[in-house]
Amino acid sequence: MPSLTAQQTLPTPAGEPHIHYLDGQLHIEAVPVAALAKSLGTPLYCYSKSALVAAWQAYWQAASGRDILICYGMKANSNLAILQLFAKFGSGFDIVSGGELQRVLAAGGDPRKVVFSGVGKQAWEMSLALKAGVKCFNVESTAELRRLSEVATGLGQQAPVSLRVNPDVDAQTHPYISTGLKENKFGIAIEDALDAYRFAKTLPGLKIVGVDCHIGSQITEVSPYLDALGKLINLIQTLQHDGIALTHLDLGGGLGIRYDDEKPLAPKDLLDAVFAELNKHGLSHLQLVLEPGRSLVGNAGLLLTEVQYLKHTEDKHFAIVDAAMNDLMRPALYQAWHGVLAASPRHDTKPITYDIVGPVCESADWLAKNRSLCIQEGDLLALESAGAYGFVMASHYNARPRPAEVLVDGPTWQVIRERETFEDLIRAERLLDL
Ligand SMILES: *Cc1c(COP(=O)(O)O)cnc(C)c1O
Image 1 (spheres, helix red, strand yellow):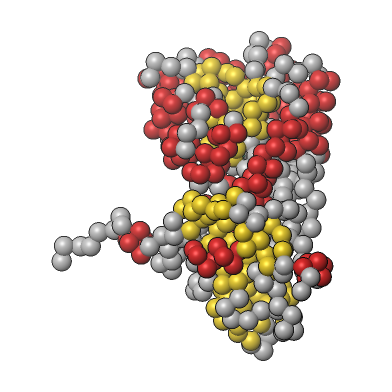
Image 2: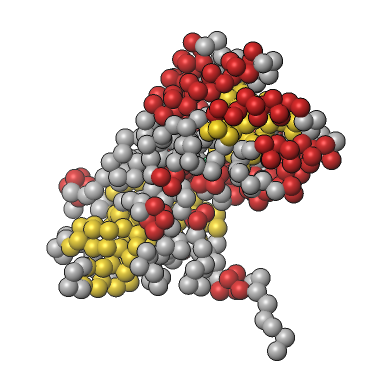
């Protein structure tokens, strides 16, 4: 069979050139996904190293020599090997917990390139971060300013701080992943920011270094960023008049990726627009910090799963697979769409419209709905765009060990997380002395 004909009839994977069909078989880089499943079992998270490199380069090239620090928003995928790779590229990290800081250190990341975000930092986390020497704390309330100053003073240090400002802009994304509106729990309202900075200046344990915002996730337009930037520029200028000089401006993360037919915003389009605004307002001395998560890892990943049963009811056809909401929670949590690809598309059955569901005892346990597929029991499917907010949200619900993770590099691969065993599930539990 000439491979060209086969390729022409196959679906194009969502916007990710490193995931493609070759001779009628789905490949991640040069490895057929069927070989990964055969060797490592399913469900299985696989990532393309080239896709990670390309996503990083898109930011790096867009920076075009400007003073910029990319702090990977690591909650999107915090596997040590992935962190190690980004650390090697020179990336910093945006962390939201003490545990994430420990992951950065374990992966060889540079703590001086770490920014610490999150609304609920505890004293031990502040202390850990101060001892590690992080670049900045993105502080979200005056109560947190007070606590951070106390913790830093106790250590004989001054904590570098930015205030995370809530600019009250609509990121035009899903309500659960929108964070820059007044009604969200995140940040300090822009009207209150000047007072909060003045208050921070009075606290002995703090050193004001920047301003920060993060308006949401899966953003596909420049305009919400520019709305936020405009408000931050006003604030920066007001602060200047007030004698508070900043050294960096952090615009957060949030760039979208392609799940279905979205047109993602290219880092270059964002950065060109941002640098133009900063130049226009005489603020080109400010270092720009970005915290991209999803857009660095999302399209690089697949979740492989095997069809267990086909179940035909009066209303619907179900493909019951061996991955479930505990492995990939986004559909259950956000009604998120993930593309579904057959590893070896067949031409011997008629397409049927299926809901792809898992074995977990919840009606929310679905991975994809209304997908037209030619499949049989035992077939291998790949859920696309599973590199971000995939494995990191996995749980043990229904006593299901979490999947393995593998990084593919050209024709080779390396397991970067072993599949869990039953022993892993019960390791921390203790029976009663009965
Ligand atoms: C989640 C998060 C990010 C990363 O967001 P993406 O949409 O994945 O780019 C960055 N900064 C903060 C503060 C976050 O909470």
